[in-house]
Image 1 (spheres, helix red, strand yellow):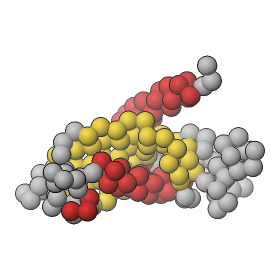
Image 2 (cartoon, rainbow, N blue to C red):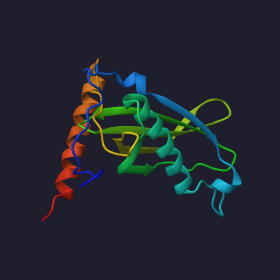
Image 3 (cartoon, one colour):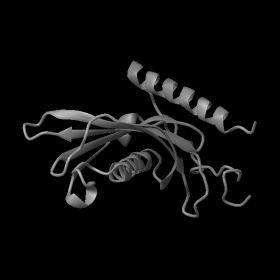
Image 4 (tube, one colour):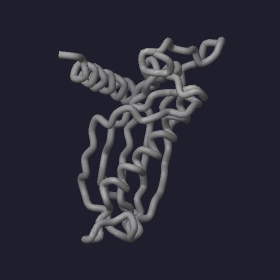
Amino acid sequence: MAGGFGSKLRPMSEAKVAPRPPALSRTVMTEIVLPQHANAIGTAFGGSVLSWIDICGAIAARRHCGHVAVTAALDEMQFLAPIRVGDVVVLNARVNAAFRTSMEVEVRVEREDRDGTRTLCADAIVTFVNRDDEGRPIAVPPLRCDDEEDRARQSAAAARRAARIARSAPG
């Protein structure tokens, strides 16, 4: 199947790619909630927040793999606190795990108050697939886990991936 998920894996390059630490993928993005981002009661549309999450996560994935990465799955998404018109929103993304052609990225969304305090408003786990210039899946550089937190995130991501694959397996 040309260019599909079943196509042959293409190497990133002839040379072996060194593992990359999660810090290289860290992405911080800031938005301000304007009236066009909000519903009739003045809180941000979930779709606007999801769009920001997708963009921030895709940048983190691209920073890790060096190519365009496309959204494949949104495993977990929770809206924890409202975001209102006029609020400043800070999104933080990082790669939790790297697999064969995909990466798990966590994106946290916080509302920043005028005094600088932040409130967690949403948290999402998104899977991105690394693509070449023709849109075919290609290998992802390994993730270098330097501390226990990185290893725990990678382990939890691997468990979520296994569960997602099990759910999508034919009956």
